[in-house]
Amino acid sequence: MLSTYGYPKFPYLQTEEQRTGVVRRHPVVVVGAGPVGLTAALDLARQGVPAVVLDEDDTVSVGSRAVCYAKRALEVWDRLGCARRMIDKGVVWNVGRVFHRNDQVYQFDLLPEPDHKIPAFINLQQYYLEEHLVAEARKTGLVDLRWKSRVVSLDQRDGHATLGVETPDGVHTLEADWVIACDGARSPLRKMLGLEFVGQVFQDRFLIADVVMKADFPAERWFWFDAPFHPGQSALLHRQADNVWRIDFQLGRDADPEEAKKPENVVPRLKAMLGADTAFELEWVSVYTFQCRRLERFRHGRVLFAGDSAHQVSPFGARGANSGVPDADNLVWKLKLVMDGVAPDRLLDSYSEERVAAARENLLNSTRSTDFITPKSAVSRLFRDAVLDLAGEHPFARSLVNSGRLSTPTTYAGSALNTPDTGSFAGRMVPGAPATDAPVEENGQPGWLMDRLGGRFVALYHAGADPVPAETAARLDALARGRIPFAWFAVTDRRREARPNELVDVNGRFRERYDATPGSLYLIRPDQHVAGRWRHVDAAALAEALNRAIGR
Amino acid sequence: MPTLATENRLPSPDDFYEALIDTHRDLTAEQSGMVNAKLILLLANHIGDMDVLREALSHARKGV
Ligand SMILES: Cc1cc2nc3c(=O)[nH]c(=O)nc-3n(C[C@H](O)[C@H](O)[C@H](O)COP(=O)(O)OP(=O)(O)OC[C@H]3O[C@@H](n4cnc5c(N)ncnc54)[C@H](O)[C@@H]3O)c2cc1C
Image (cartoon, rainbow over all chains, first blue to last red; front, side, top):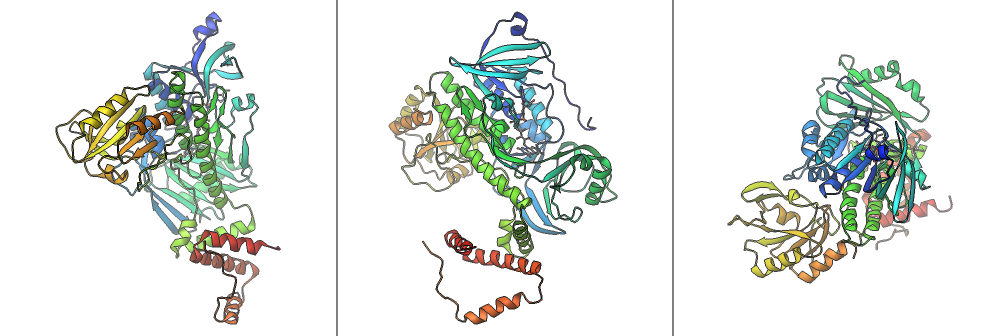
């Protein structure tokens, strides 16, 4: 039991299907109530789709797991209406420091750019995150959370999936049009479909300890190579909510996990790090090894894999939940359009294509970090140490120091859903990029651009200093009522008589970040990624881009 | 695309060679290994061109 947290126990309730023995067909069954499954269910609910969520357990994530959540995952949760609580409960941080022995070799600031609603990173214990998501999912009235419900079989035929579910009352059967498999790194569903999960397994063991203490360390990420208090090995310090600090110690390959976990071995290590006079209480200890691997494809018929079941990364860089949440973000709007018959089935293949590309990027980064932190040969260790030696004095070597490249969102650069540029644009808002934020004023109220994007297609027309030409407004209005509905906003340079769909670019950030000129038009997908952009409104081009973005 | 220069560019090759060997004087094999590693990193950054570096890496590996 933790001194700062009591695990909720969610009730197992017998369902009507179990009582009557009548097999029901559900539109979507989500397997796994971890961060990714809960995000998917909540997103489905926001789209008006009821979801059954099955989890074999009846509580949240136990012990110390994910800590750091990046801006993009928080933006997804913000779109779903629940980031505020997480940010308020969590610890916001921007600065990271890297030490080699006693010296600081490197320092970074994650969000040097002002004018974003969401911070670069927060730290929050995974159990709080999941508790918030469960509470939010319940509020929707559309998410049917079923605890103590373990999926034991999965079969696909005749355009649906059949799941065998084991509960305290025995095994019963459910049918689903679609299954989202969020059953974690050991994914039983992956095994039921006989899918290979290939990649690299790292030998080094890591000890993870949560301690409660009132200490003066700032809310920053501190990483040591060859830590003075832990010679030859790395260590990481992070502050979480409730004065709980998370400490990771590299143990090497030969460590005995059971021995390492014993308090008589953990406490001296912590004392050496925190100082003999620092009072602390040990909350949690565990020992991990790490893997970097993925499924070749994330879609298998009516079963869609998301999160750790689809890809597993080492934690350096915090790319686990931070890449699983965007899986859900990418998938749900597509599933909804396919379910509604608006988009063709192949739109779901683009889920796999786009998120496999993201997983590749994340795996590449996390494998490289792991290789730097735990060199696997004498020469690899030699170069690593040489880099650290040089880094104190020579700036170039600091760029080689890799203590984890922290999670950044993926730009779906090669996606078939993108409409390639015809006009020329500068900056980062290329087709496939996640939209970036800007402060905007709407009806005289200050707000954020990101709050207007997401959940549906959105077109942003940059009007500049002039009013929107009536003809342009009429064309956009007509198109917006078409087969693929979208909302459109006029982004203007100055306040005028407010129109309901007008966003005032109060300090020019929109213009700057989107390289917008009067007449520029952006089409943003329901997951807030850029689908296409033009220098002038062309209704035919916009209609074509909409079709392309849904796989037509 | 720039390529790796393999014709001589050193005004005085013997001076360079002597300086290189001198740098390692009185070092253990292990210490020399560290000096070489740092040297490679410093020079690689100075070159700063990934194509040239890849070429050098592959030449260095040849025949080993
Ligand atoms: C030490 C450590 C540190 C980490 N740090 C970070 C970090 O800082 N930032 C970050 O983003 N990520 C981090 N991660 C990764 C993060 O914890 C995972 O990526 C995340 O939990 C994945 O979420 P998920 O929903 O895909 O799977 P999980 O959280 O594993 O959830 C899977 C769920 O499926 C359920 N389940 C399994 N089998 C069945 C079945 N047959 N039937 C029904 N239910 C089933 C389980 O009960 C579980 O609730 C860290 C991981 C570790 C181990």
